[in-house]
Amino acid sequence: MQRYFLDQPFKEDGIAMITGEDEKHITRVMRMREGEEICCVSEGVGHIATILRFDEDGVTVQDTGNTSSMSELPVQVTLACGLPKGDKLELIAQKGTELGMTGIIPFQAERSIVKWDEKKGDKKTARLRKIAKEAAEQSHRTVIPEISEPLTFKEILKQAKSFDVCLFADEEEAKEGTSKRIAVRLEKVYHGQTILVLFGPEGGLSRSEAEILRVAGFLPISLGPRILRTETAPLYVLSAMSYEFE
Image (cartoon, rainbow, N blue to C red; front, side, top):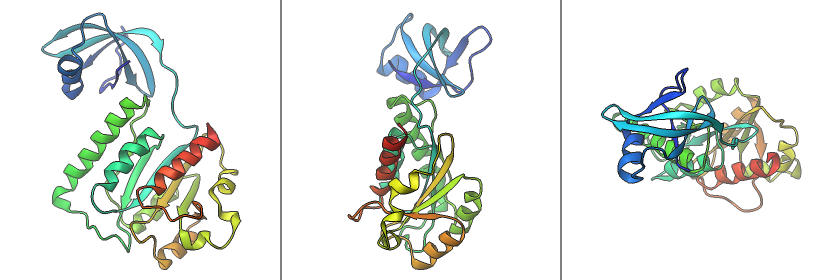
């Protein structure tokens, strides 16, 4: 069943309107007809709705009173990613959404080769948000991950204070012992908690960044004996969390 996120919640009479790109998808791509059912996500709940009519204002749907099953991770995981090269951030946005992340916060790390272009920044962020929305629909999510504007390293530390648990992937720290394995760290994480996991760009985090993170309360984690690419590590962590909590 096709899934769409509503811009406005259902009215008291159970009516809602679908416009914009989603309207075009329903009418031109899927070529749906009146009477067909779709899933409309509103305020974190997937409502099964019937298409009532098509007109110039958009597609009008009626809530049937039935809802779809929940598909969100029991924990809220936000990824802080050192700006990577190329389209790697797009890959993380898409696959991270499929795996249940809550959001992405890009940041400028010491070893980030890429510099965020302020002139093109809005377009890049808009594209990442579109990718996350489409991936959320495809994977039957009830939440579209939040895509943040890039922050500085210092700004990341300030935001970290609002999370229940803060972790960072660091290959050098992970070599010191088995107590830092991700499985061990997740034993002390509980359902409903908010988690921030920080990853470096290509080349990883610098030693000074790693030390600052530890002082700020971040816990280092090991992602196994193999060195993972910057776009693979976040997906590994999300998969591990899905296995642990689901």
